[in-house]
Image (cartoon, rainbow, N blue to C red; front, side, top):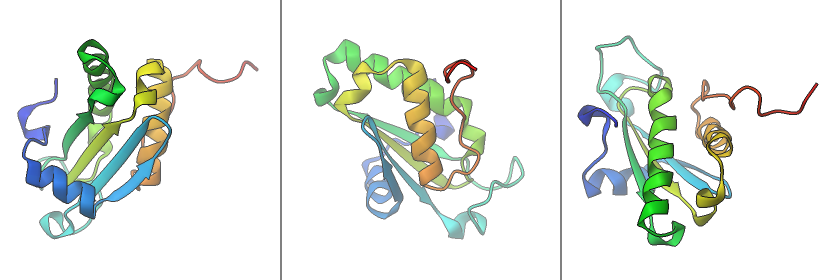
Length: 137
């Protein structure tokens, strides 16, 4: 579970992030990142305790599957984002939208998709794929 100050809740924040933020998509996810440059003076990660914490919201529609599948996908995404919340710029808002293909991916595949999308929207230190999921040497 994300802490309350890291949750994106109101529809106006979702709308602003989706309309004005940087966007990156893959076969299973679409990620929107909005950074409020005026709030912290830049989009660099600042010292803890300064600036507003990053906030994250998830969109998992019925197209992904039934309620059990949707909740599973959302829990996996929430866990993956929570692991790397500190990599997001302060005063930023992130919306992660799951596409139907997300329901068929393993957690490791979902991690790789999310990392790729985050890197494409400018989160330079996005999580790397889990070790052991690459080709054998």
